[in-house]
Image (cartoon, rainbow, N blue to C red; front, side, top):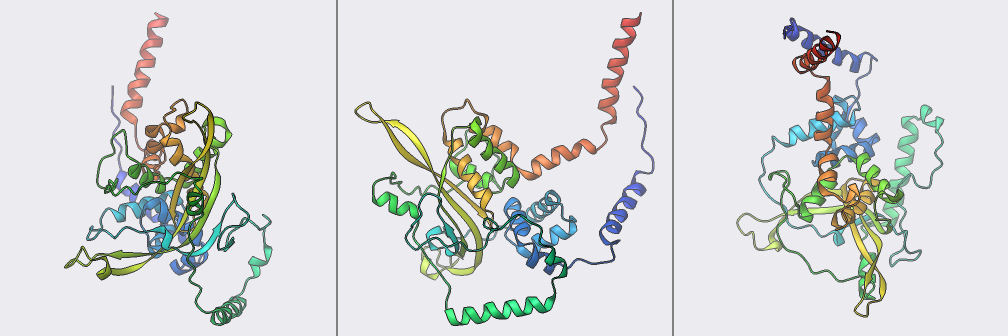
Length: 365
C-alpha cells in the first residue's frame, strides 16, 4: 500500500486560520465582549454550565472567539479551565440559602411564599419582535432609570424561601433523607469508573450537553424510560460561595465570602409504586434533583429526570444505563470524537479500499 505525503500542510493551515479571522471580521464590525455578556445571557449561562467554569466574562470571550459556536466556546473554556490551579475548595453550599429571583411549582397552585414568575420566555408568544431591529440606546436608558427608581422605593429585594419539599416531608408525604456527609468524588480529577456514585453522576449531568440531556429526558417521557415527573419546585437565584480561613479551617464563622453564582435548581416529584408490609400496592413519591449554572431551566429539569433514571435498578431502558448516559452527554468528548472524523484517515481508508479491490479481483478471476 502506498502512502501519499501531504505537502504544504503548514502553509495551508496558517492560511486557514487567517481566513477564520477574516470571516469573523469581514462584516466590518467588531463584536464587543460586553455586548455578548449583557445581551446573550442565556447563551453565556449555557456555556458556563457545560464548561463547568463560572465566569460570564470568559464565557462571552469564548463565544466571540468561537463565532457563536456553542461547542467551540465550551471546548475553549474547558481547555482554559484545565490550566487553572486548584487553590481552595469552597464550603458546602446550601441551596436553601438561595436569594431567589424566580420560583415556581407545577405541582401546587399555592405554595408558601407564592409563585414568583421572574424572567422567562414561558409566557411570551413565540413571534418575532421586529421592533428589536429599531431598538435604541435612548430607550434602554429610560427603561433602566425606571427600574432603578422602582427598586429604590421597594428597598432590599433579597428573598429567601423554604423548599416545597420541606412541607411535604413535614406532612409525611415524602421520605425523610438523612444527610450524606461522604466527600464527593471530583470527576475533574479522577478517572470515571463504573459503577459510579451519585455525586459523580450529578457532576457529569450538570456539565453535560444541554440539548442531549433534554433529548434523553424527553425520551423518558415518551416511553423509552419509566420516569415522568411533576416539577415540585423550580428556583433560579444566587448562592454565596465561601472558602475557609486557611489558618482556621474548622471555624466556618471565619470563612471568606468570594462571590455569588447564579443557578437553576429543580426538585421533581416522581410517582413510584411500592409494596407495603401488608402486601398491598402503595403509591409514593421519589425526588429527582437537577442543578445547573446560570438560568438553565430545561437542563435542570432534564437532569432531575435522568437523576432518577440512573438510580433505577431496571436496566431495560438505555437511559437507565449509567455508562450509556454519562459517556454520551459530555460536550468535549462527543464534539471531539465527531470532529476528528474530518482529520486525515488516509492510511486506514486506503487499507480498507485495497481490501475491497483484492476481494473484487478474486471474484473476477
